[in-house]
Each structure stands twice: as C-alpha cells, then as structure tokens.
Amino acid sequence: MSITHLQTYFAGQWQDGSGALYSTEYPATGETVAQLHACKVDDVDQAVCFAEAARHKSDWAALMPHQRAAILHKMAALIRERSEELASLQRLDNGKPVKECRALVASAAGTFQYFAAVCETFESPVTPQRGDFLTMSLYQPLGVVGAITPWNSPIASEAQKIAPALAAGCAVVIKPAEITPRMAIELARIGEQAGLPPGILSVLPGKGSVIGDALVRHPLIKRIAFTGGTNVGLGIAELAAKKLMSVSLELGGKSPTIVCSDADLDHAVAGVVYGIFSSSGESCVAGSRAFVHASVYEEFKRRLVEQTTRLCVADPSLETTHIGPLISKSHRESVERYVALALEEGGQLLCGGKRTGNELGYYYEPTIFEGLPNTSRTCREEIFGPVLCLLPWEDEADLVSQANDNEYGLACGIWSKDYKTALRLGQAITAGTVWVNTYKLFSISTPFTGYKMSGLGREKGAASIMEYMMQKSFYWGTNAQPLPWSQA
Image 1 (cartoon, rainbow, N blue to C red):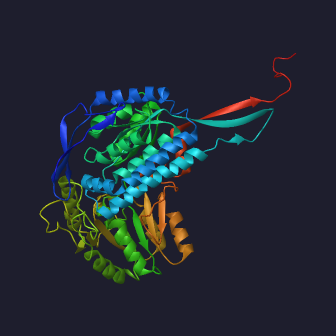
Image 2: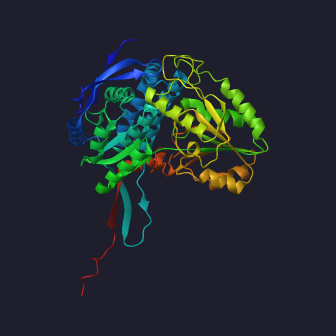
Image 3: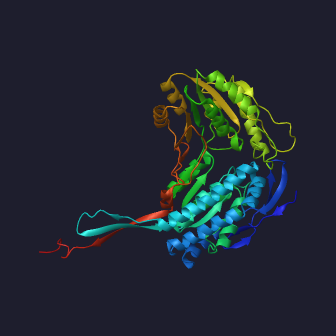
C-alpha cells in the first residue's frame, strides 16, 4: 500500500506542521497509509491570529447570508461529487466498513446543505413592544472558534461543527483526532475550492494534549465545540470557565436499550444488534446495556445470539462487511481487558469474546454477556467496543432506576408496540435522545445533546447556529417628547 504525504491547511496556505513527522495506519492491516508533520503551539497561534485578521479582511461575517450560504451549498455539492473517493479515504483513516463511510460522507454533505439553508433563512426577532420604544435583537458571529473532533466518525463530526460556525460568520480552527486527520484536511480543500476566503478554515493535526490545549487556552478563541472522552471534556470545561467561554461537549455514554414484553422481537433484535455492533461498537450512543423483559428474555436472547454470530467481521472494503477492525492495537487491548473483567465479575459469555482469526488488523468478535448486575464495572463504564450486556427486568420502576443508575445520559432505545408505554419510559429515562422502535438514526435538523456526564450544550438543529453568535438587543425610541426624568 502506497504511503501518502499529507500537508495541512492553516493560516491561509498549504504547509507542513512545524512538529515531528508521524504516521497514520489502516486499522484493517496495520500498514502505514499516510505521513504528516504534527502541528505545534506556535502553529496554533499563527492559525488563530491569521483567522482573526482574515475574518475582518475578507468581510466574511459581513457577507449577506445568501452569499455565505452559496459557499456552503458549493461545499455540499463538492462533497457529493467526490463521495466515493472520500468514503475510501475515510475507510483508510479509521477502518470503518465502506458502506458506513458512504453514509458518513452523505451525512456531511447534508449538514452543509442544511446549514446553508439555515444561514439564508435565519431571522432576527422584533420583540413585543412594552413602551415608547421598538425592541429587536440582532445576532453577530462570535469570531474565531475552535473545533476538536474524534476518530470514530471524522467527516460527519467535523461537518457538524464547521458548517454551523461558518454559517454564523465565524472563522474555524479545527483540531482533528491525531490518528484520523485526513477528513478534516479534505474538508479544508473543499472549502478552498468552494470559495472560502483564506484563513477562514484551518486544520491543525497533532496531539490533543498539545494542540487542543493550546486552542482552548488561546485568548482569541471564543468558543470550543468538542466531541470525545468525558475526562478530556471536563478539562476543557474547566479551562473555558476561566475565560467565560461557551462550549459544547459531546462526551461518553453507556446507553440502555429497553425491550418490553409486547415488543416486535424481529425489530427489537435487529435494532439492538445494529445499536451496539455497527461501527464496531465505537460509538458514543452505542446501546451497550440491553434490558429485556423477563417474559421474552429467553426467546430474545436466542434470536440475538443467532443474529450476532451471523454478522460478517471482515475487510472494511468489502460490501458484505458488517463489522470492520477496531481503531488501533491499543484500543483492542482495552476492549480485551473489559472482556476479561466481565468474566472476573461473573458474566457468562454468550458469544464472541475473542479476536477473529485474521492475523492482520485489529478485529474483534461481537461479544454478548449475561449474568452481570447493573452495578458491575462492565455495565457502568464505557467500553467503546462491540460488547453488550443483557439484563432481564420485570418491574418498570426498578427498570427505570437501573437504566438511570449511571453517570452517563446520552441515549436510550425503547421497543414496545404501546405508544403510551414508550412515551412514559422515554420521559422517565435521563437521556438526550430517545429512539422508539428504531435506533441510531440521526437527522441534522434534530438537536443532539447529553445529560449528566454525557455532555453540555447542543449540536444540530436550526437553533445551533446561535451557539456561534452573540445576541445584541436594540431599543429604538419612538417617544414624541424628550425623556421626562430631567424635566422640571
């Protein structure tokens, strides 16, 4: 496999970072696929200062909304034109099956298209009159904002941060995951081709502890949008508080899926399998705890194991592959430690629990445990891999208590034919997203957020453009006479 030398784009030009040369690898084989120079703290300062100057020099924020929208529409079109190429590059970047990569690329194009429409149709309110004055609000861009993205779904996650920020009139400096920099670099290339002024979008690959930290601390950065681990997110929140800087933090999860006694088991089994094992379980919303009503538990378990063992764990370039490799050797070892822990805690292994026979790449079989209490570490901690815990339930109040007994609150799945039951459970579960009779489907028009340690702030939805804006109120005097205060 040939090795590509990547340059990155920051401070308005294509260049190497000033740090050491490093390599990225294809998780399916462990081969090096790209080399690039990491950025350093000085590069962060150069990119941010150039972005601050560029947003004034180019009048990016002062463009009419339809003019900014036209560039975002062009970015969406260019992503679609290059969709197959981008899907292939995404696959090489993090090992996702090619069909999933195509869906992520399509999602990114849809995100730019959506926020182009939001940009062009965004309205400032004239508020109700309460005196001899007319009141209204105007929105202005925050300035230069930072985005820090994860390795599990790069192009989609990056689009969800870049598009609303650009639509709002901000300049964006993005720090992709060190091991998956390629999609952010390609989005910068697409932005340049679409007509983004130089400096309005920059990409700084490198270590999060270096680049991410410097980006958060930089005095010209007015907002950070972060997706990643909870501990890192807490550190960002602490630094942001010292600057009184707004943040959005999409963090971890240990999401419950609930199968009721009246559930359509065909749909429920397929949904639970998809919810935990797609993306190799490397998903913040993965439904990793399945609470199944005791009356259907044995039948559900039989079907679940049968369907899981039929999944194809193979080369992600194949159209028939369901599950590709995990992201890295070290991450697979982390998953293996959790599987060993589950056995130590008394879990009974129903399937999986080991590497596949493929000697190349970081593959791991989809794994199901039963017999673990909800209080076990396996059921409480985010594994971020293809490991599912089955738990029976009978009493609804106890079910809700167990489902909520976790530091996370990102998502939930409910399988029931009774809409009243589904609504009641959905309202009782502490989670930002509730799926009913489906799972892990997304819409850019629908806000996404987490409760508790799963995050802070919102992404997606039309209102998220305001996360990148300041609201300024105007009072227009309509009184015929001077203000009476100083009058005799």
